[in-house]
Amino acid sequence: MGKIRVLIIDDSASVRQAMTAILSEDPAIEVIAAAADPFAAARYIQDEIPDVITLDVEMPRMDGVTFLRKLMSQKPIPVVMCSSLVEEGSETLLQALEAGAVDVILKPRMGVADHLNDAKMRIRETVKGAARARVRGRPGTGRVAAAPAKLTADAVLPPPTGRAMSRTTEMVVCIGASTGGTEALREVLEALPANSPGIVIVQHMPESFTRAFARRLNGLCQVDVKEAEDGDTVMRGHVLIAPGGLRHMMLERQGARYVVAVKEGPLVSRHRPSVDVLFRSAARNAGSNAVGIIMTGMGDDGARGLLEMKQAGARTFAQDEASSVVFGMPKEAIARGAADRVIPLSAIARELLQATAR
Image 1: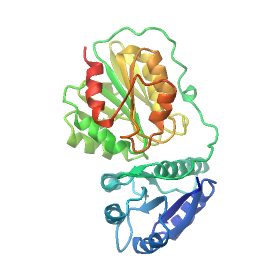
Image 2: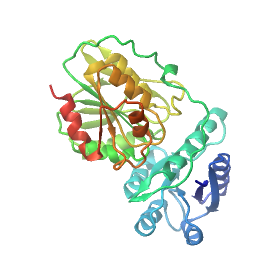
Image 3: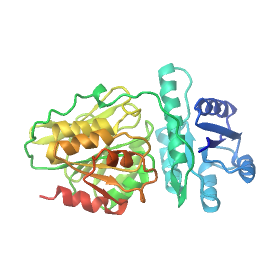
Image 4: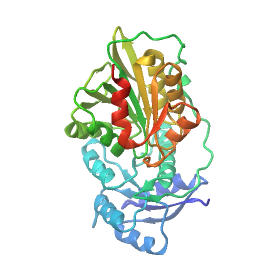
């Protein structure tokens, strides 16, 4: 396959220049054009249809969400929303995901080299994931180049000991997701009753975005949903979502109950928070008291950890290809033999409840 062809839409010339430079550094990506507004972008699209569009949220003449809705109704193309907005603008970004955007990235901030390098990596990987996404029945195209070496969960936690875990009075459900996961998680959580088992989730997303995401889900679901804080107890009827971008979330056991630890650490499987870290902590501290579920997403984060959970006695599930926006993370888990069953998105809530029933 050829390079992933990207169209950048942003009213800032400096952002267009920075995004072009970041994406062009990857040999698998080609920036075919950079437009200052949706009207100029529409003219480019008439001549050449890109594989992926990166789209600014706030622009003069037409905002990004309005353009996205028009685009999805006429010519569906994988779109990644690109914004400098943090929490105060997160509701707008959630509207973009509902309208069909594949993912969200924060605009690169110049300055600290480590931060910029992390941002560059995330931007390029997000674009690659979008190129593979199914957008309303249209499969993406593009080739993914070999990535640099990455850390495993060994960088944060030692491997499970293999000791049998004693039963507690409650089960805990661990879920990992990435590209396409925000809407997939909404569908799962909306289907759960108020007395569902405690759930902990790692969804790859930028910092300051998960609080608004949790707040939105909390208003839609019977279960209580919140962004996790260090020391939060995992309780029946409650869902904890790992804070995006800065720290890992791990499951810990205190007597007969579970709590989460939200700690700093290096990128694992190129992510922070990492699904592998959460799943490994569940294998170490919950064993057969846990259920692991890996959902739609790019890459392989969570595949190793899900296998560790299975080996520790947990029930494990992977979302199937047909219902995944990007069949990367589930595919890797399935290939490793980590999933007891492969199930469609529509069945995840039901299977989760059955697997945790006493």
